[in-house]
Image (cartoon, rainbow, N blue to C red):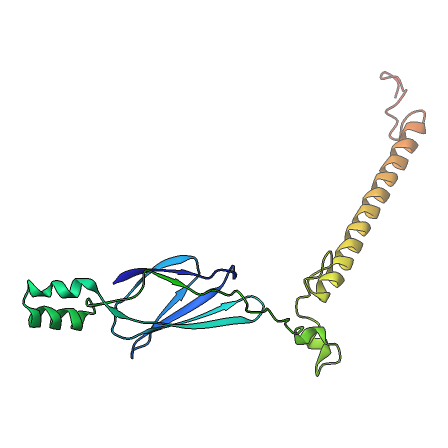
Length: 190
């Protein structure tokens, strides 16, 4: 294994996929990121996508590692066989740079739910809109109206109940002896 750093100048937030060998080992990379890559005699195919429908592909060659020549001390044939089988005799560059300079971003078409002349506009119009200061889904605006009306109704009912209680209390207070005769009467006369 070896560490390889991936960078994508002029493309912030790009996503890259690196594939190696017959088994197609696949690595998902979010540059700038350093990942552990399995060494192989096969070249690495790197494909990066960036915003604005930009895409770049690059082939990174696998080269013989300088440490391979130290197999003289281990015996040339056995050391080379072991290193070749394990992939230790190969090496990728320590840094892979995929520069998006000069790759022009293209505009993206609007999603189909913005087309009210589509095949099924009632279904497609229920998809989230994400417009500023508007409910995300049309049903949300209907629910908001219903909730606002319910809160207004509750406030009216509270006000009516408070007015009724105040009227009741004012009538009680207006009676000389009180509603039940408990006001103004002397305690000894019944």
